Length: 111
Length: 117
Image 1 (cartoon, rainbow over the protein chains, first blue to last red):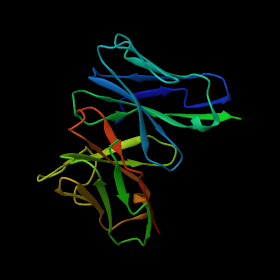
Image 2 (cartoon, chains in turn brown, cyan):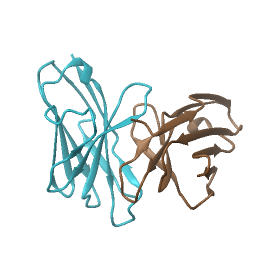
Image 3 (cartoon, one colour):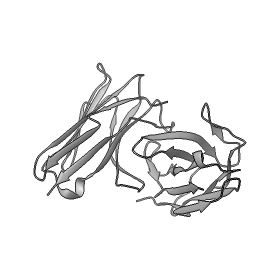
Image 4 (tube, rainbow over the protein chains, first blue to last red):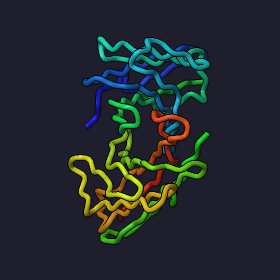
């Protein structure tokens, strides 16, 4: 079963705008990761945030984690058409444990 | 970065036949690999955890006799869909952890699209 939900399920924005998506989970976690999947392809790891971290940056990506609310957000700044993809959050309960994925957010960046 | 490959990338088979999908870690040794299934516009659902040299651990609701997993070496895990039916048509993705770089990140293969006619 899935750990949680992602919101929104779909997002359509113009190139240059920011895209924000949220992920909620149900049980305590060790780490939360965000992945990108282009249509019909495998997953690409974007960023990992540990349970004792609150915010992390990587290039145009910003991830926050609120363990008290069991939620995380992924912000993509200055979006590009190439950012069009599905984005998934995934959680694990312990190091090296299996990942449980959220439902995903489909992002469309219009040029 | 670590690379995981899958073969074949797509396969069409007739109902009742068996299909084998390979997952390889190309530049690292993976003691643990994971197999996921993904239906169109849905998320990834973990099917099983494949451990080198031992039996796979299947998730609840996944038929172990239908989805045979073998992890015979540190770089290869195989998933065999036995007596495939149209409802088995899906996108199958494997992943592997590279213990040499850390215990957290999983590297995903490009996926195998299975169509059962």
